[in-house]
Length: 366
Length: 258
Image 1 (cartoon, chains in turn purple, orange):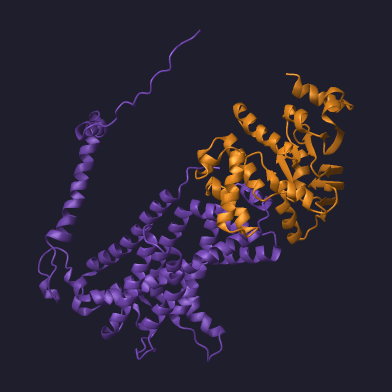
Image 2 (tube, chains in turn brown, blue; image 1 turned 135 degrees about the vertical axis):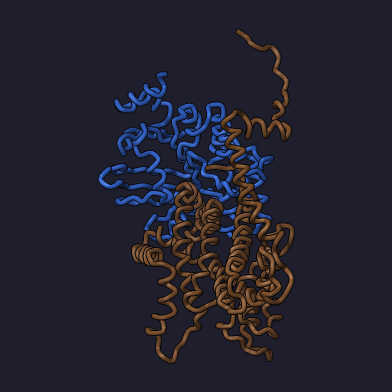
């Protein structure tokens, strides 16, 4: 039996676009129970949002220098204003802040350059960001060269310190994590057991303990004339701790790559490192972007724990400012500010990772 | 194919491309390859068939050391296969392999799939590698898809790209591991056509396949394996018309009798 003598013409799919009112009707008010829930939801939203907006914006005080300028019921952002320099730079000497500003400007320029696809010379910028920039940043921040007075690391703090800890931690943890993940999958028993022990040790210990050990116990083992800067110790502890997490995230990604990929690369005569570097890792890392960024975000927030070894990161410096007798009673403003700053950075990372995932997607599964 | 021809005539090693003597392999306690003896001359086309689990794939995967044999000797192009990684890589450069599931690199375009090994293994400049890749893609009739990703191609197209990718390394011998088993019926022919052309140009080939039509047209020898052994080995005409062993007869009646 022949159904159609002629081929049926292509037709556009039925339009699914509907107006806002139709959308409301089908999604929020389609029946009595849903309508009740919608109304209750709106009421709860009203209860939450209105006081928040009133407190944070409408009734808030923005301008002034002392607490006496905060007379109204709302938030006292004057406190943040007055302490802003400290929150960003810690106890960095005021007259040397230009140096930190150059580093900040360079840091954000490099990140923007690497993140915006249109800009050229990505490879050279990346090399400079990883090799040249850390040296420049160190020379500028630490001083002691070119007639710049030295600023010891215990005066570094605030957002500057948070970003420093997070960036060094991320840049260090990713390659170490890759090496550990490959090592854990290795056939060589010594390499494999070293990696397993390393990963399981660092994953099994709380970060607070790691930082305590780095600051209290490490000096006991080192010769008395040798001292490692406290910030450096915290950085090493943080990096090693996060690289163990990173290794497990990456190992998961490596396991998801079909064995045929490595076999095909091997059959073409590629060495182990080429098989990994050209074929397996690019695919695994792409798949692992959500996991890697998740680890980065938790690392970013974990930096706040350096507070307990006497380093004043963004949260630490806010807390220290709260203890100031001239500004007692403004802890809410302080914490909201700190939370907001952390949220900005973490949210940016999250958005960028979503963008990367879309960009790198090449429409494949196998 | 001029390049392969120079390879064949220009290499002064022995006449034998692949030699296997007394090769045995076990997966744990399971004896997958039992006393395999096999000689493949340059330019010879061999088809290996047999029931699933008979060790056909394992046999050809031993030739480029994707599987390790535990006993016996394998010599490829005059180079004995040992544990030495450098030597294994040397042999793999001269042995092309096409897999059942294509195994194209999904993060690279078709062109990049073909160029990556010439560029990184043979250190060819990008320009030269790309020109050569385009020639081979032309030959497997897929040049117009060069900038697409493998995920955008059909199975038959992907397998032809995989063949081109192997040819870009100018191999002396090509191994085909069930190249058409994962394809839809209407795509099998386009892949077999490419393989027939390759055979007619004088490429040394070992094909694990159930395509008996292909075996009849191009094979110099057909090898039947069962339970890890070579049961029967003959030219295609007597192999199909007058199989000697009972197991071969049974197998042939099963795959030809429907």
